[in-house]
Length: 436
Image (cartoon, rainbow, N blue to C red; front, side, top):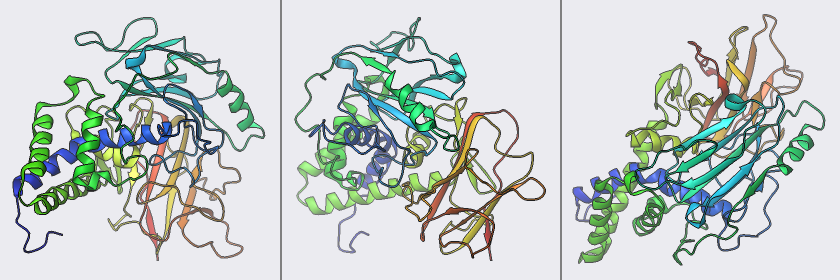
């Protein structure tokens, strides 16, 4: 809140607000890379739920995600990740994968602006993908070359390999580990030299989007890894205006406060967009465009805020819900239910799940260690008519009650459906009913 005596500069606030909407996913994607690669200590021991590894190296997540995983936002509890962030300015990289038989897997190539370049896997190639070679595209060249050569726009690129785990099958986690061990990434082991301020405060802090100096520094560094064509001229000009204002003003505190107000307004715009991105059906925001953001920077920011690095729509759909059937925010002070009618379960070729998150997108620690209800959850109880009801509440249901309980946080929370291999048609998620 701006102090009543603070000089206001609407132009600075408006500039910062617009720059936040464009820059949030770029800065957040950079933060994700820094956290997973840990440049200040790249060989640090990581938890088994993390796929982190030094830059230009492949890391493997060995346990399904739980609340200890805080590096990103909205982690899934369906797949194990094998993950690498690579510096294409240091050279080309080659990725070789094993035969996955009929198990779901995918390989996503993510650009540094949080968009997706390519998604390959069971959907596109069946059980095995030929060798993939990644390189940085030169201006004027094609996006994708022939014979497995993939051109990327960004300097820093994410390689995310998802492999489905079925907890209902004994020993399945170990079988996925064996597949992970057969994945081979080759290329330059050491990245090219970077600016000394690479680490910034982004690894240690997560609020640079609210602090003018830190935000502008993080954005400046992140822009340096993008293709020139991916940075609109207005972004460069706006960035320069804000930097000059901070450097030249005689009232630095007031200027910084006005920019901070604009950054906060931009974050509020992004959070509001999460509730209605795409189309709104039964309280669910459904982004039919997937990772095809085009020039819709607010959609790109909303996706980064709630789901960063989603797959293209042909690979997966990610409906998000933050409100009940009457438009009231979801909050653990209340109890809720979702009922999937018989014959109207999420239409997914490979798998589906519904996961609960804190409002900020992290998993909720609970007594069941259950974070989602999925098509692989053991011992689900169906209703007599074949429908499936999921009860969402903070406290354990009364003894003897037979329900499919999905624990939720006591405060505001968010639900996310995942449909991998979404089938065409008019299906929509059912509403979240608040129980009285």
